[in-house]
Length: 553
Image (tube, rainbow, N blue to C red; front, side, top):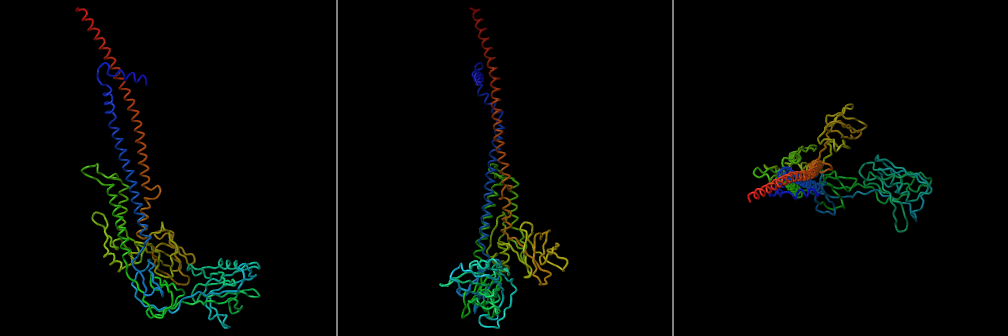
C-alpha cells in the first residue's frame, strides 16, 4: 500500500498533467463496454425473473378461479313442488336435462322393518350362548299374528352371529353391525342394530332398509330362543314397524318404490317424499341459467385478464424497444399462450351426443384472441342439449346399457372418448381394442381405452354397448395449468436458470473489479515512471540553463 501511495504521489509532478484523471479515463474506457454489458444482462435477467413470478401468479389465480367455478356447479335446471311439506324435487346437476310439469299424490311412505326385544334392566346384561341368523325378504304377514305366514328371500346375503355365555346386549349389537353387509351396494347396510331405552328397560332394536322386500327373518338356535322372528322358532322379537314400500301416483300412473328418496323417476332429479297427501300437488322443473351465466362470465373475464397480462410480457414495440415486454420472444411464454388458446377449440369427447365445444356455451373467440360470451346462444344450445353444459363442468362416466357398469379407469392413461363394447363369448373388444375377461369383468391394458374395466351383469346376456368416459373442460384446463404450477415445472426451471445467470453476473463483476484494480495499478506505475523521467529532464535543463547564465555574467 505504501509503495502504491508513493507511486501515486509522484504522478503529475514532472509533466504538470492531471494523470490521475487520465488514468481513470483510460481504465473506464477499457472496461465501459463490459460494465454496460453486465448491467444490461442483470437488468434484463431481473426483469425476466419478475415476469415469470407474475406469470406463475396469474396462472395460479386462473387455477383458483377454475376451482371455484367447479365447486359451484349450476347446470341450468331447478326442481320445484307446490307443497314442500309433501315432497321436494331436486336437480342432481349431473343429468338434469328435461322440463317437468306433473301432478303427484303420495299415498304411503316407505318404512323400514323394525323389531325389538327382549328387555333387560342393564346394557351389560348377558344374552347367553346362541347362534343367530338374519335373512332379508318379504313376509306374507307378521308371524306374531298367528300361523300360516310365509317368507320369501330377496336374495341378499344372510348374516350369522355367534354369542357366548358372557356376551352382553351391547356386544351383541356390535357383533350384528360388524357382520352386516351392503349386499345391494346402495351405500346402506342391510340391517342396523341399536339399543334403545323405553324408560324402564333396555332392548335390542333391529332395523332393515326401507321397503316391503327388505323385511327381516331372524332364527335363534338356542333351545330357548330369545331373538327369533320367524314362523318356526317363535316370535320373541316384536314387530314395531312393517317394511312398506312408498306408494304414489304421478300423472295418474300408480307407482311404488322401496325408498322415500326416488332418483330413477325423472333423469337427473331426486324426488323426496315427506308425507302423504289427500290431494295432488304439482312437481315441476324449469330452466334456470342465471347461475350458469355467472360462472361462464367469470371464466371469460378471468381468461381475458390472464391473456392480456401474458401479451404485455411478450409485447414488441417496433418504435421504442424500451417498451418491449420482459419476456419478448420467450418460448415458454409462447407455449403457455398457445395451450390456453387451444383450449377454446378443444373437442370434449366421451359424452353421449358429443363431442362438445366451448362455443356451444355461447363463448366465442374474437379477432384479437380474447373471448366473449353471449347468453342467448348459451340458452339456445342448453335447451337443445343440456349435456353440452355438463361437459364444461363435470366428468362423465356412463354407459348406454343399465347392465354394463364402468367400474374402473385410469385418470392419466385412459383417453376421453366413446368406446363400443362387443363380445361373442370368446372374443371381446372395448373401443376396438382386445379386452380380457375374468368372470363378469372385462378390462383393457392398451390403446386409448387403456385402464378401462367394465362389469356386465351376470345373466343379462349383454353382448354389446357403449362406454362413455369424458373429462370436463374445467378438468382439462386444470391439467394444463398444473403442468406449469407443479413443483419443478418448466417455469421453476426457467427461474432457476435466470437466478444462475444473476450469480454469474455477480462473479463477473468481481472479476471485472479485480481487472480494473490491476489495470489502474499498471497505468499508475507507467505514468509514475514517465513523470520521474520528465522530472529528471527538467532538472538537467535547469542546471544547464543556470551554468550558461553564469558564463555570460
